Image (cartoon, rainbow, N blue to C red; front, side, top):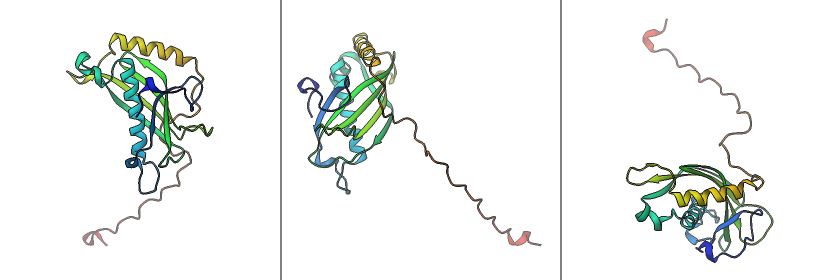
Length: 191
């Protein structure tokens, strides 16, 4: 996987979205259907979050020094297009919200080639800062909070993403559920 400092300008995503990760599809990400498995989409998004956190000062390389890390408290995923062997991926990111101990991220996963067909998948995550000695939510360290605040202000000027995972729901009325047939009364209760 490629570090953010080595990334060329975005070939995918909306204007203003930062590319946090570029990576080829790994063979172990493919499933029996010949496309990328849903778990691998989350691996790609998680790798982008890790790269982002490292870049802003709260990555795995800073745990020993700060005692802080991040945990994902919620992740919502939409898969829109298949990804296959040989595809190169770009994951873009923007901040949708920020609190002293949490950040709301929106990410798009694109085929690296500029196909113009939008994201193959999107993921929203609530990422929580955790102080590891108590394993409880804690405010971001000051330098991380400053970096997040600057990014949140920049991203607030962007139009909202067109595609939000939101809550999982069946968007059509469910068919009526028939009551289960009543059971016959036990032998001793029959007239």
